[in-house]
Image 1 (cartoon, rainbow, N blue to C red):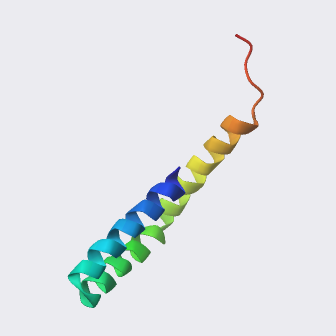
Image 2 (image 1 turned 90 degrees about the horizontal axis):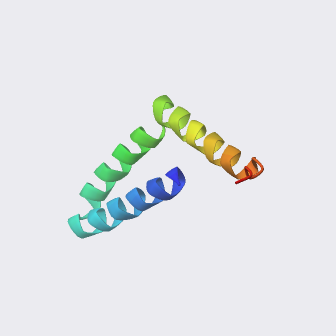
Length: 63
């Protein structure tokens, strides 16, 4: 889910940057790279990925 959100944010930034021109696009791209590359974001993404994988790997609980 988080990768989907990041991809959506990137796509929105791309469209807005394309409309605003190359300079604005580069500004948005740099901000995205700074955000996506931060250790806090990478750690949060890893935790979410792990929780999602655990949800789908755990056997269903009896009703």
